[in-house]
Image 1: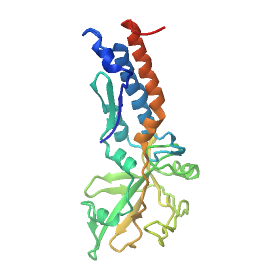
Image 2 (image 1 turned 90 degrees about the vertical axis):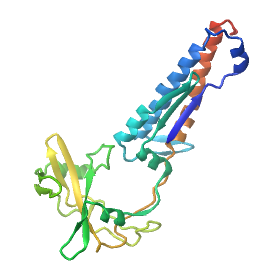
Image 3 (image 1 turned 180 degrees about the vertical axis):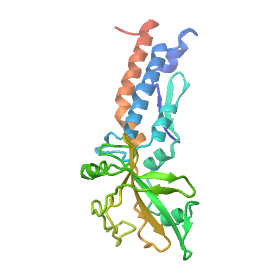
Image 4 (image 1 turned 60 degrees about the vertical axis):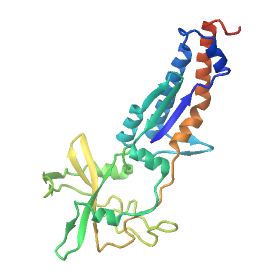
Length: 272
């Protein structure tokens, strides 16, 4: 679980509390802690998880693919252990993967071990993997270039004609030969030396209904595929939680201090 916690660090708090009667509970300070937690910490974290550019320690980063699960987890992850402490947290697996990064991985064993994998006529296991592509500006999935989208939205719609486990399709139009996004992996990439056989959007189809379209490509993976063909490179950590703390610290402290000063004035302990 990733967490951002704030606590009212007030000057001479113990001495002041000792002089308060039971009816004085620092209401302005408590309200400031709540506002700083909900209106500043929580909302900043939601913005970062939603794909805005994050400035952190002299650099910047952005969450490339956002999920509703991650944002909803932050929205639900709010608690106040006591009057002067607020906490925002997430239990999202996607959030943890962003914070911690991911090691390089061979995706082939896991995909072929899926219950959706099938066995071919010659006994080799294979699986067809769908990839969704968003329209330009989409943040919940990788977005296609505008030139590809112009072609894709004109395609005749493809439809599913039978559900799982025997899913079949009635195919409409598709983008045929296209080299856009074709890659050759070099350097530190674990799949170095492998070149894609087609562009990223070759074979793309349009599915769904007008106004609710989905754009997909399908790639076949089998036991005969190149050992380097489904190697995913390492993904560097993106320290969202630390960025939230760094970018809100001064404002949080100011909000709480102002609340504390109002409480002092209310009980006659504040100065002019």
